Image 1: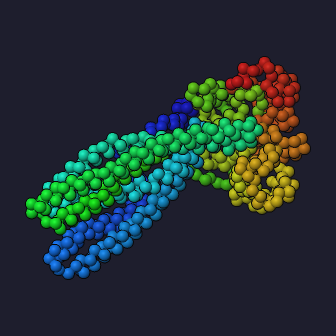
Image 2 (image 1 turned 90 degrees about the vertical axis):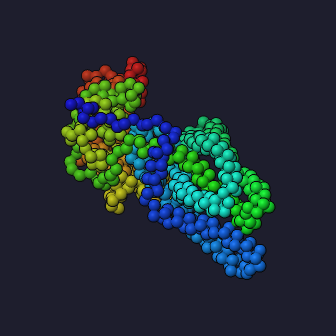
Image 3 (image 1 turned 180 degrees about the vertical axis):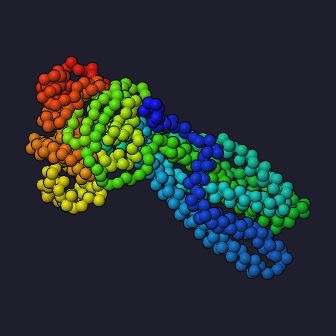
Length: 603
């Protein structure tokens, strides 16, 4: 069985569906509510108790009118009415607080789950998705869960029960007046069926526009110096403004339909009141009902505003929340890596590496980057990878780290296919310095300890000396506790590279990957780092992608890549004598691809 068959590729990123089917939406909503069902149930019970006390008020008012007509005492009835108002208000306030508190807990839990999943996404998923859109799902989309998962669900339940109870009371008082009321409400309520889908559509587009705006901002702030150097502030501001305006347009559209939905409730009740007042007045005049019954019925009619409003609001919130749930659910379908922190340090001797007829492309519609790459590296020593741009040098490291999976052939570490390694064990054995040597926002100490959080103070001092960072630490105002700024903006390019190398060395890896790790260093620091790398190569397997001749000449072996294939393997002296491409690269100090290989450099 081939390696590809034995290790199927992860599923492709699903297309945005825009909206889940109703059953799946409710299932997803319940998944968010389920851990909090006890406080939600208690909040719902308190809200229902408050609603019931409100229902009793029209009955008490009916009794009050009848006693006034009979000349009886009304003190006890007034006392009951006051108690009902105070009790109902207090109980509903407690229920509202409990539901709002639970809603915040739902949002917190959703954000935890999303962030944990997003940080475990496979690299192809991240490369196909806008970071700004992913951030919008964690921030704005989860915020929309606040109401729909608690308040709107409770409003749907309590509003329905209260509505039924109100209708039952109205029916007992006078079925004719109930018929008039329901006729008007049903007629106006039917129009809601046309309004709610429009709310959902506008809310979905508004949320997508917020994601686009976040993407534009992330692009601008991620290359802030480039934006300023290019004088592109106004253009970037216009791009952000355009995305913001699109979000505004759809947000206003959603607000307009929400206003229509809300005003429909008031209109229904007002028209019903006029109809009931007219019909009820005629029935009082004919003696069919008493004045007290008409008063109580009208109070119930006004009380009907609350449950109907709750139902309409719950339906509108559901439309907005369903769009947010769909976007959050899309993240759960993205392919992730196994979740495991892994051991902080590697253990064991230097690792061996081998590529066995490896074939790889970054996208199904893209050309192969590796076309049957094969080479082997024994444990220990330094191996350099050279070749024209686009030859597939950095891809070697991406496949070793399993940021991407080979489409064919095998990538072996210690004679074992990397896809058979537990991922956390594989990466714990590797120290990796990326091409742009990223430094994270935070202090210098936090950056150094990022890959080795349990390193001792002595180990930190040792690695600072090895990477020529001691003078830098002494110059910084707060030493290791100095905040280095967004992406290390307070450090020079060479300082960032040395920090990245120190971070990798502090991990004490069995395999050290350096992707053009000295490209921004001056001659003095490069010479010092060469000695550091040579020293590390005595106890660690070091793989280097380099464009500088001074780095390559130290290597025990050099792998020459061209157009996705291994062209030659040997020492510097052997390759200068035997391989014309390497000879040309050496003559140009590896700073540019030779003219005759322009096509290869595009691969």
